[in-house]
Structures are given as C-alpha cells and as structure tokens.
Image (tube, rainbow, N blue to C red; front, side, top):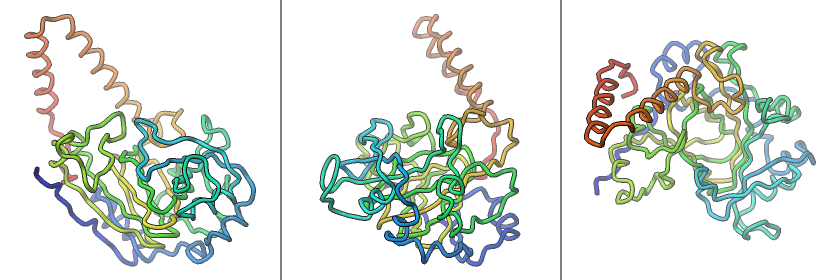
Length: 316
C-alpha cells in the first residue's frame, strides 16, 4: 500500500500582529508561531496551581478506556468531577480512583454556563486562570468568538475534524503532536459530518481506507509557549505527548451573518453551506424517481457540473 505523504508545518519566530497579518495569515496555511508573549501561564500552570486556582467548580469531562477518542462511535463516557480532582486525575498515567479502568484517559473541553446558548470563554468560566494568559490580539475585538480551555491526559489522541472559524491553538503546558490536512483533501478522509472515520492517522489502515493514502499530511510538534494557527476548514488531529493544557481561541473571519446564530462550538457549517447541502440532498432524493441507468447518468452530470466550477486553489 502507498504510504501517506508527510510535510512539516512552517515555523515562524518573533511574530507580532503586523507580521502575522501581512506575511502568514494571507497564505491560509497552518503555521507554528514561536516567541509570542503569553504571560505567566507557561510557568504558573502546574498541576498543583491549576487545582488550587481552578477550585472545586464542577466540570463535565470525556473519559475513555483507550487513548484514541472516537466522536463518531462515541467510545467514551461523560462524567462530572470537581475541577481540582479532574486535573490531578488527568495528570496521572495510572489511577487509584477511576470510572472505567486504571489507565483511562481524561479530556476537558470547557463549555459555556449554558452550552446551548453560551460559548466557552476562559475569562468567564475560569477568571483567575484567565488573568495568567495573554491572548494574542491578532484580530479585531468584535471578531472574537470563543476561548476554549482544554486539558488532556498524556497519550490522549483526539479525532480528526475541522472547524468553520480561524483558530489559535495555544499550547501552555506539555508537548503536543498535531497532524493536519488541507480542505482540498476532504475526499480522501472518509468523512462523517465534520469528522474523519480514520482514527489512527499516523498508522492508518490503508486496506480499509485506501483513499487516505492520497491525502497530504502536515505535521508539527507544539512545545510549551507555542501557538499554532489553524485556518478554518483545515482538518486537525492532536496527540498529547504529555499532560497537556492549552487554550483555543476562535474568531470570525467571515461577516457575522454567515455563521449559524445557534452555534456555540464554532463547528456548524456556515448558513449558505448548510442551505446548499440541503438543496443537494433534495436533488439526490429527486433522482431516486428515475431508473438506475438514468439516476447514475444524471448524478454523474451533477458531479461534472460541480467540478467545472473554478474555485480557489491556494491551499496546495
């Protein structure tokens, strides 16, 4: 079987707002940004400090008995723990107290007070910790969407998915491996919604997923203090090489009315895209009225019509 092609994500030192907007952002490709002043979080956020400062507030966390979390088949459970208890468990490799197994993995993705209405914002959910981190102000204040506090057990791998907004992944504590794929490689990723069925992207089963070999894989390692720019629609998969703490900052780079107003996670397709997909589903349903030979012929014509459109090719 043909191996998946790999390339390194470009790394930039001493990036300020002007350089980011002039040199890096227009490329619409992932980039590791080093040397951005993030505040005292990179030295302060030890397990003990996080536990003490975050306190006893309850958090809803993912718990899995295996390192690779699968959001399509839901191979994990949700449990609620006091934040200080969760942090200490997440930092352990072997647990004396557990839900599923002594080597289970934990993952926190912070939520708004009411996740159906409120976005995650570290300044609101964890205000004392928010004081320790300087969010890079590389976008306008009214573009801000959310700041998501994340904590991962060592070895935890998250599913491959895309987001519809631009994103800074700020790695505060621990090393993290990130693998990314261009939006143009979506046909090779075996998608269910915004997620890939291919869980093990580093050693994929190419007999089961042969098209995956055509995808161009971009990879990088994030060290404490690094910031990864992930443009909207770029697929990404992360592995916490150590106990990991970070903050994702999402911002709206399209006009506000392009986004679904009910979206509190930043992963609902833009309104026009959702409408187009609904129209396509109706068109495919209509084709079912035809005999097989005709249905196949007109479906192919529809594909050709889409392919004939001249869309941007700047991702490659």
